[in-house]
Image (cartoon, rainbow, N blue to C red):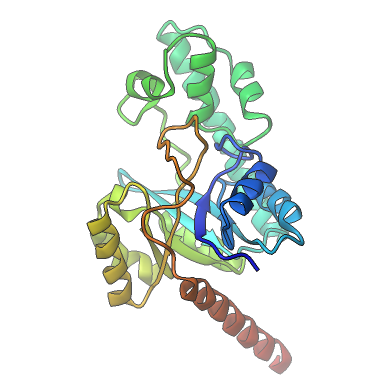
Length: 289
């Protein structure tokens, strides 16, 4: 059994991360991690590959996902833990999201072309290697074509939320994202609320079925992490956290895989208890019908 940290927010090359799932598992093992969760955007391919890579190593890999949702002008990310990554309906829905990501990427590329930048969708697809397309892949394409100097410049000048080539995401409401995660057997958690900075949304999200808050995140200063830890306790929610790791060459370049504060393993056990109780109730209902 490993004696190490817990990181519940990791991205692989199967979405917009730089590291292959197998490489991420190797990094976690080298860092003496005990539990990690792969939370790629709109795909579970990285989950499957990470589970295979970690098999027999003592490292626990929690199947996860990160879904983007929109309420008004707010981009709200919902993390899902212990999702059933083999559920056909869940796979069908996230495949639909992947298609919408492709359509959005094509629109962004057209906007860039209108701005005079000679970039093709094929370049973006080559960089993505089959992953659900996102703005990070477009940023890397702009760098590779020498149309910008850095990844950050691509966002600042062109494809950031206020940039001339920005295209809104496919609209999924927070309630729909939460429902999808719950239907897949998972635990829905609000990602990095300090980035959203709209705590007035949290009671409404709880009404929709939200079960946790990601208090520990690199973009949360220590005092903000403590604040969200207390806020979660106030509402009776699970407290999670992670590095939101995308790789060394991505923005948010953290030297370590783990954040400054540690995730309490009791929170992971609480998620498992919720799922066990939910399954027990489901069996009782099935046997009585």
